[in-house]
Length: 261
Image (cartoon, rainbow, N blue to C red; front, top):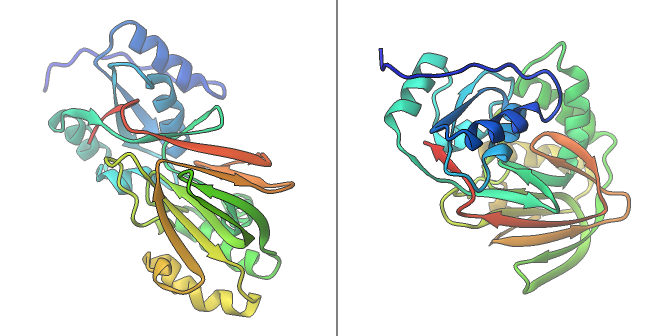
């Protein structure tokens, strides 16, 4: 009914969405819409970085976490109308070393949770698989030694449960892991949670689910445009993808991506 010319493309291999988006931007497309979950959204956004082509999203995945930060409706017709009625404007994005990301990167408890959640995804979906992962991880997680540098002026060394760097606010289908994140301010919301005895972890889970964990003594909240996490043998999750990387440098980009939101 809006009389819009469009072309549809299906992805058939990893990073294909990045290639397709980059090609569309090169042809002068006004908007590229990612139809899928957070992985498809991140791949598509990576192809539009530093172009004048805007990103839109129609959520069709299990978690759909980034849309919860920017307010895109879950239902596909409403999501399309949202794109058409919201002009493109800048949105923060991030780089971890040479990897683009849009939502959240982190190390620690949430990586083990993601391992268990991914294994359970055939039986459970969305936040259900994540909660299953939380319960499984409690019994086997050990805090990780971490060297942390935040914004060039905060240097920390310790054992941490969670080290999360958020451009968006949510992971795991709606867990507000970095609840103060603002995609317009050029800053990450950085959440560090000190090591606590394993028996105490269940007492902090309600606060984690409600986004109020930062109010409790084990948690430390920072806001900065860059940070570094280093740990021997570290495994990091970046927008839901688990990567083995011992040294990471995160940089927030405030003007690299346009998005309808």
